[in-house]
Length: 205
Image (cartoon, rainbow, N blue to C red):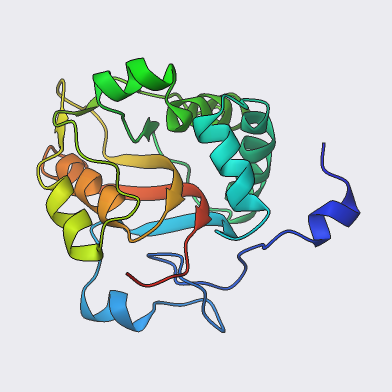
């Protein structure tokens, strides 16, 4: 549960770029996306990646605080419904490499996608997209290093019979992770990729 007083203190992301969710004075397309459009057609994010949300996500992601799953899923599902747009055919969580999954014990993006599935009535395919390279952690890398680190990191494990998907991740930082995953999906027949995420980092790398 989230009381109204606590909700008022959260760094909600309201007007932002429709493609990358960077904050704007009014909803539209930011200059960066106009010059170099990202592969995804749209991005939905709940919050700016600031305190206290960043601490909550870290607890959810690294410290097995899975109680946050339902809260984030409920808030994100509410925002998705408020758009009054067609839902995707399937939700695809950004995958972890198997070795990283063994270390952590769970994929926080898959946890979020499963909870969203139950609220939205849209199935999740957590095996269609795989991480074929065990990339270095993105934190601490520059923008160029992040992009290089993720090159050809993803692959599809099977033929994907979808045209419209939502890629689910916990945080949108530079966008390199979701961009590389989106390209992989589009190269395998997906026409429309949305990105759904809890928070959008504002810092430019």
